[in-house]
Length: 246
Image (cartoon, rainbow, N blue to C red):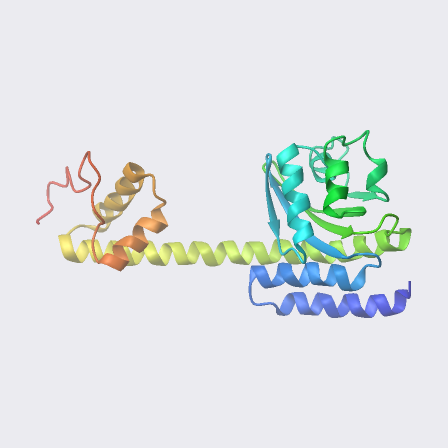
């Protein structure tokens, strides 16, 4: 491993991550860099685990999706172990998946059939509800060396910061978009039905509850149709607005 060259490429990757214009683009750059920079890596992806539900982000190869889906299906595997580790392990490295039958008797042989020879993973974040890891895959056994692990750890350190920053930015954009949509929908209802701001919001809220549709989606439907969508059986959302004039 030429660590001087690696350092230059890692610095370039860090600059690229800051330049990405979306959450998805940031994640794609992370996983692409994993394949480019880490020796032995054939594919990479980010696994997010919500309880036992798995989501695969920015996979560079279908192999990543298949492996993550297999862990979710079986409820076992290296990412599940890391997520629920009492020791808070931040790294796993599996030199040869064929030798892991005793640890993951269901996952190991089937993952090998998918084409996974060796794996390596690094914790990106963890909280009470979610776990996220950057995972590296090789189709050959014994592909990941000590240098591979060190390179992966350095890359994952940058990736964790970029992931957190990009996700926070995406959440803020989503919140702003939601507030804008709700405000526009409230304005339509206030103008068409002579409601106060409080009454207009109550219409949206009650319709959302009665239809089990998220408030932002209700607001979008109001904006698209310039009025409340068809009211389901039950209480009409305008009911009890005594000062409302139809």
